[in-house]
Amino acid sequence: MKIVLTILLIVSFSTVGFLQSGTKQKSQEMAAIVCGTLFGSLNEGGFTTGEKFERGILEELGYDANVADKEAIVSDFLNKNAHTLICTTNGDAESIRDREQVLKKAIGIQFNGIFEYMRANGNYKGKINFNIYEIIDGEIETLLDYLYKIYDDEELLEEYDEVEVYKLIKIVTSFGGKRGSEL
Image 1 (cartoon, rainbow, N blue to C red):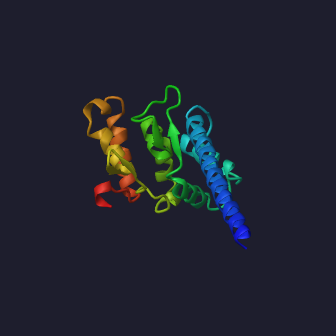
Image 2: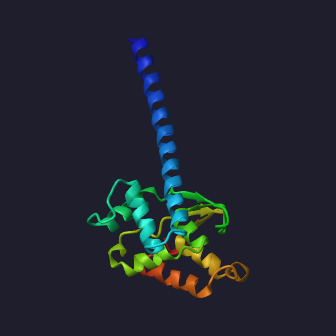
Image 3: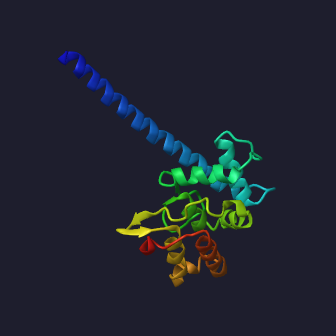
């Protein structure tokens, strides 16, 4: 009986370890795909960059670009996976930090089209959680904090279009985005 129990425990722990490492690998693969979609959307012609990003996510999830309630599908995916969708700097697309959550990276590389598209397409309102945060230098940092980090730093703001950053602050706020201190 002890031998059977020991074997079961070893198999259970091995399976949990395998599943966890498999989940981590799958998360990293999905992050690479979504970040690749983000960077690729900047260079393709045709649709707006926001539409290309949306279509890229839908395609990776196995959906047609015209699927009903696509905004809910994309929003649900971004919300559920926000903490694992980390992009690294890609070539000339520099931002504040090398590793950033996908929506912060979009802002960092001045990929404002995704936010403009979400605002223009009213079906995203209330679906994406813009209050997902990271702990940066011991502080809660939301997407709105990230935008204010750019907007309030004169030197950093020189690398961005001030009007566009302010517009993004308004868009994120209109979608319910808050600063970390407000959570």
